Image (tube, rainbow over all chains, first blue to last red; front, side, top):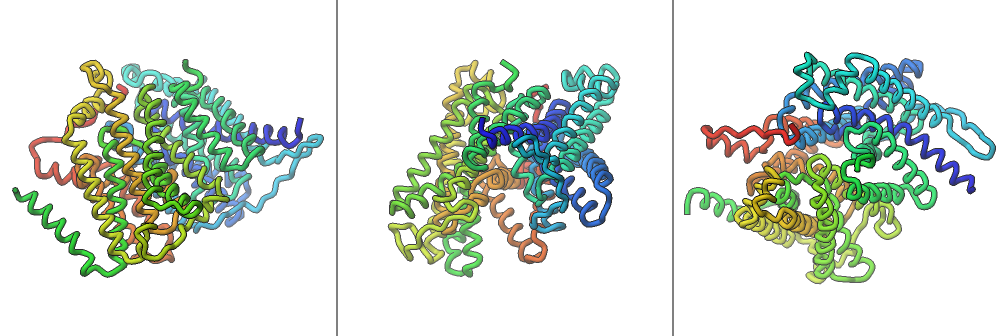
Length: 284
Length: 327
């Protein structure tokens, strides 16, 4: 087997981990609150700037900067819910989607205002690991491992805690849960915070691999929506699997052609599959 | 002839007389307002019935790039290139619309599938950089003042074209609004199953507005490209343009004829005003404020400015709250 193709496949798997993490966050919010945060990838962009600013400009230690970014984006998630989603919870779902689209404009331009349009990086080079003839970036390996840990932690949180159970219940039947004595508003806040924290974690992992700029959300934002829809909006396992399918298409497509064409391929695959499995890959 | 007609006739007279007194910079703004107003109106022809498409950037892109590429590489006049681009867009609308409507892809799903479509077109343009210039953009061969090439350095010509196009767009909007299909479309947007049960051909009605909307959007994109003489995938296709279209239409008011135009007027003058006010030292300041305003609009004025004004005129009829589709 071609060694470079193998490398592309491995890189695809590693990229899939981070995308899966983001898909989990978006799916959680959709499943519970029934809202699509179009600006989700831009929350990630904010997190990346927090890491950059604290680590590269203020000289904080990296783990501390990452923790601050996760907490910061979690707070941002809560703010998004309280300020934007809560006032229009009762209106048409598409309005909520569009309101977070306004947030997308806001965050991108605000980041431009504060940091300018230059590409920034942490100035941190993690070593390349050599496995036989294959080179793997340890930043990607670390990102993949952390993303998996994050996903597993979320799984146990949803399964083993009371509030996690309430979150799963609300995703199943919004009306009955209220009768069971669960405070919906509190669940929504917690869900938004978790969704934000997952975006924050993804931001830390992406900041290790990519330069941050105000419009970085546009490059992988549509990718995340596509993954969620492909897996079935709200279907966490479906989203998880879809993340790896899409990342493989992009990685292998990038190996045979170029990056843009591989994205075109992924989006086209998505549109076609939408028509074959309109409710997600796992639902017949 | 009532007061409304007189106002509209007066407005039209001002618009026709405008080039005589307007300095070039404002002419440039007016042309953009009219052309984008036309595109936003085209979007709202389907958007008002709840088919919220985030894919109209794709139609603008196809409409603008097809004639320009044909002109540069094969010397095909835009008079042939533009209809071809428009037809391709209509076909694209059909190809994406038919399966969507067949499989009842609605709401979030429809928005996200169409979003993917606009990304496909944008990324294809970028990927074909050998032909299209990629993200660096594309400049049609200049031919001076030429009807054959549809290029006019003099702004007055494009102003006349934009004005005619915009009026045509309003006429189409009006025809759809007054046509028999309108009741059917209203019924479909309320409850698709029920509409089908009373004998409405849901698929046909939906496809009809989709194709009309896609074709007009492409036409707008084509003329915009001819006017600007510079095409860029970021500004004429993709998620950015798609969102720009949706927002301006919503800010102005999707449910009334002049709403999208008011949206175009407002967003363009806001953008220009803020740009002039803040200068280039604060890139992003204008759009930051724009973003906040968009959020406020969707929260407090979901029917847009024109819709809100109409509500003021009819204080007794409270706007009925939209019931969530999924209980």
